[in-house]
Length: 66
Image 1 (tube, rainbow, N blue to C red):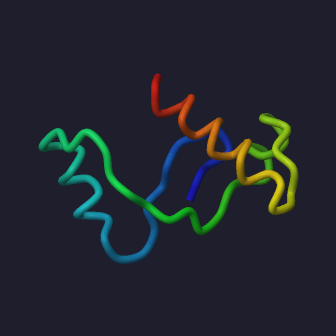
Image 2: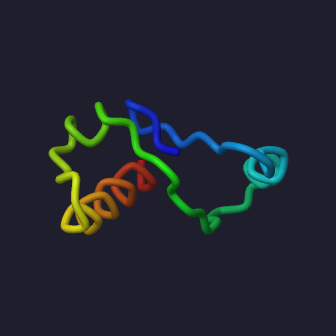
């Protein structure tokens, strides 16, 4: 899930794998977005429809590069 400030929160089972990968320096990992905070969507002017997917991907890539 993506929090209101763009932080990535892993939910349910698998948290230990996510944090272990970070600790050992895995540079990238695949994930599925299950939800995005409303404030994050509004802050980045991402439409609440399938048309917003491309913009959401752009914003996530921008955050990743930081």
